[in-house]
Image 1 (tube, helix red, strand yellow):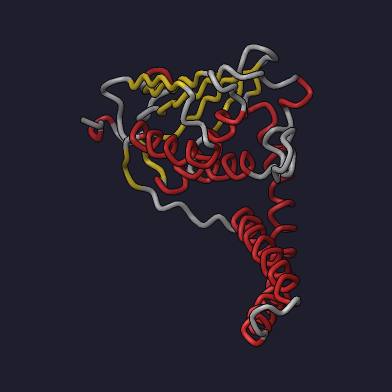
Image 2 (image 1 turned 45 degrees about the vertical axis):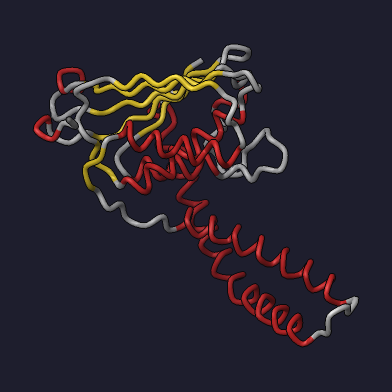
Length: 246
């Protein structure tokens, strides 16, 4: 089954706009009291003598507050991801960087990775930091779906202008895993905020990836079937043919 971004892009964009507004209100309302909790807990820790039974309780407060602070930062990023700072870059190089980061996050050093980078591909015209962040989320999600002996295949190619009704065309990065696949009822929800089938996950990674790609003029298409793995097709704008990567 294929989920094309065009099929429900407008509906999802409306939902995410409302969600971003909610994130902004939550982050604004909680940040000040949370800062007070952190500051006072840190001060109390300094005043307590070593060996005090209260130190363990304060440490729990600090760890919980720091975790909440990190979570609020993610919500703030969803509310205001920042305008893209576009510049030319090679998408295949960025994918290599993102893969190393994603492997470190999920501990998937044993997964076999096969990369096929098409030659003569133009450079992309996006914000490389935002695109790399999106790819880290997508690759980490793909790696988590794999068994220990699973395979991940990456393909980067140029959809030439003739195939894109003129213009410089788009660059496609395909991320294909040999995991368990996604069920039909879940496929239409995977980019929704807080939707996840994995324990101990907040369900925001794919939402962040979708928002960042949309902000940069890109898109994601998903093809998946239970028991047969998943293919993500990431598309980003290319610069003019004169700016092709060597």
